[in-house]
Amino acid sequence: MKANLKFYEDNEKKIIAGLAKYGRQSGILSFLRLITFLGAAGLFIGAYAGNIPALWFAGTAVFILFVVLCIIHGGIIDKVNYLTELLKVNSSYIARIKGDFNELRNIAVKGLKRAEDIGLAKSRLYGTEFDVQGHDYSMDLDVFGKKSLFSLLNVSETSFGRKRFASSLLDPHVSGISVEQLKNKQKAVEELCSKPEFLMDYQATARAGRMTKDPKVLMDFASSGSKTRTSANILAIIGVLVWLSVPAAYILFPEYGASSIPACLIVNLIIWVIGRAFNENYLKACEGMPNQVKTILKLYKILEEAGFENSLLKSLVKGNDRKEGAYESLRKLDDALKVSAIRSQPLFAFIFNLIFPLDYLISYLLGNWAVNYGKELPSYIDGLSEIESLMCAAQTGLVFPESAFPDFVESDKAEDNAFFEGYDLAHPLLDNTTVVRNSVTINKDIAIITGSNMSGKTTLIRTVGVCSILALTGGLVPASKVTLGRMRVMSSMRIVDSIEENMSTFKAELVRISGIMNAAGEEKALLFLIDEIFRGTNSDDRTEGALTVLRKLSKPYICGLMTTHDYAMIDKTEKDFSNIRYYHFSESYTDTGITFDYKLSKGISRQSNAKYLMKLVGIG
Image 1: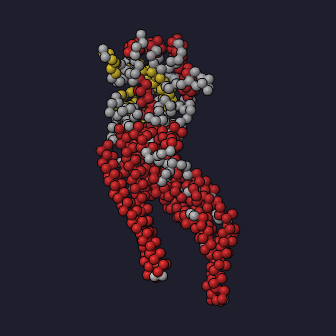
Image 2: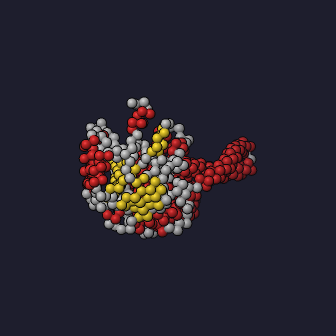
Image 3: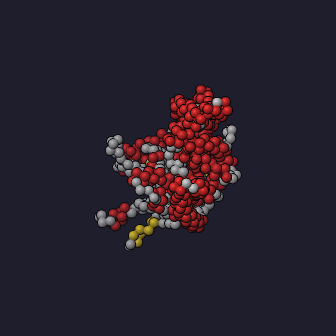
């Protein structure tokens, strides 16, 4: 699968044209709104001053026109807001294809003024809040951060979607996912890759609905909401039936007919005051739900109209055991919340409840929804979050020059899953136009990679790790072909000391290596990635320590890659180990500098460019 930059560049022109069109319409409508408002006000003033009935009718007609123009203008403003977000989404795709992380950041903070908002936008882009201290590989493989897998591939715009995608990057081995489940995910991702317009529509809608915060109020209400009390319902019925006394009074006691109306208002006022205790929790919930419910409803509508053919996507949209589809259920909640919008202002709430027990009606509708559909809400949110995670997994196919769906080892045996074979692998965070692709195979064995500084050793093992993680999310990988087992991935690469924990670099590395060795005792498929083992100690201890680690990791259910400059260790592994394969990177020297080809080759390299590099910077 290949990226289609032209599609997004052409789409950008269409969106800009749409913004210009609706911008002009918005300007015209703003002018007409002002004219009609002033016209209506002038007519009403003239009618009052001149006592001219015709002007009252004319003023009313112009005011109605003003209201209609306001409604139309509101729709135009919504379209402008949507297209503004759609342009940002489209621009982000262009930036991803070009590998421009700075532009991704600029798009994320565009239009923001406050330092706090800018900081939050960057945090959402980088996903740093999901980083776990001491994780198996997160820091080493650049899962989160400014230039990371998350910032490149995340297209989820809801808080729960971001969490699900972050989890898929962090814990692909924890769930014990089957090959069949991975294949089902791949089929879903493949269909999503074929619908770029849908992906952008979904994203822009979520962005316009500001879905960055957790729907906590909604989730809490859905889980704890209950039907209104019988006594409250009786009071509400009384508040409605009391108005029957007005026509009855006019018929039976005409002299008391007029006074029956304020009497009814007083009764409803009393009922309203009494009902504050009954209705408080329902009305409080209304304050935090409307916008998120409205947006989630729109997202489900987009999903239902997408016409998915894949069974997994269909099940995530419709659900398997629901009474009704998510859209229909949420539409009922949205209708109830629209009724609650009538009482948005305290004065309106007071007036409407004097006439009709509105608070009771709102509470009744919300209570009924919570009882009938509330328990299904977590599955709606879960469905959306999984779809968004799959959307992120599809990004590799949409932004890279070449990518493919990986094949998986069909066996469930741990020793069969200790396998990785990749052709034309590329690191997704490197420049697409200059990245050098490599092929590597490890099968129940260990690949030791040698070569000079900066030759590409560390990048290669990161590439294998990243491709393994992406594969286990159900997405594509930047390669022409990859086959692998379902393995736990662990690494020891970026080792940093910790003053707070009184831990030296060497001790920090020991902790990481110890974690890998402990996992090796679980008899589960494991892929390890170790860069320059025990670099923080003397050569003899480094050699003996490395050999001890290699012996512990020489298991039929383990495979891995290790880079080293320790040729004393390599000499001993050649004699004592049969499960080690050797690869190397090389370079060429000229009078003007070093040239690296970054191509992986079989065998051992004993070249070193350390003295040359030191001389180059004026040392020695």
